[in-house]
Image (cartoon, rainbow, N blue to C red; front, side):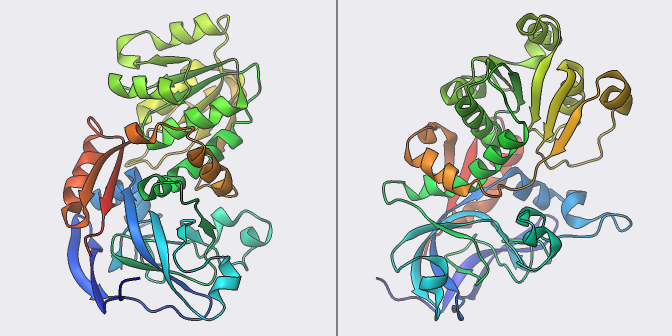
Length: 363
């Protein structure tokens, strides 16, 4: 294995629209820590919205505190190969030198109320790679898995870029799980980006009556069908309420999973969902969304569930990717060298030509 250098290049977050490609020291693993060489790192919509200054990440100076702790290396979707182990790390994490691995994006404290009851995705310190200084991210060449990290070994049959997709796919599976999909349900999934496509694939495993995928970009609808959608619709080119009513005897869909982060998709979902339907929200929004809450209560008595991260879903995500259940060659649409991270962010922000955009470290 190649010698580990003293320094590396990294994408460092300094502020809104202020990400810099800088030289930083290569970290050294302490007890029960793992050093990995980053193979690939994805850019998610959350990364792009952080770059643009979304309130969810930077706060509003009043009610919403800032979550980002600059300066910090960005990146929370990644795969990495083990190159060095701290004392006790092999036993702690079940890894060895040379293993291809992924680490869950959140490093739980293991001590708060939520960690103790198994809902570690809600961990109160909420240390996620790429946002807090104690958990630097993967937009670089080498990364430390802390002692509390949740590490998974990926089969060697899985290509490293596909392994990088485990993170968003685990999130998708969590959203599907929250929807409590039944065999006779009509399920609508709004948005055919990386999360939405993963939701389609996950929902297919539940074998509902019908899966309807929605997107404003027609070629992404074709990709949704490859992932398992029965019907794929562009809401700007049809009367969506009429189309859903045709499938449901005029009642509306049983499950609506929102994966766009657009306010119009939320309102659309409230229109097409059935009475006593299950609405799953799994997005980061760039601005506040308003809707008529009486639809949720007085009109339809809906169950609304929010989803965050992918707790307990990583083994299933790895096994489905390893089994070829997703068209990964189509989903990973763009790859850039790490130094061209801004091009990658621009692709994600546009959303017209890309699905999953990845960066590859150059040293």
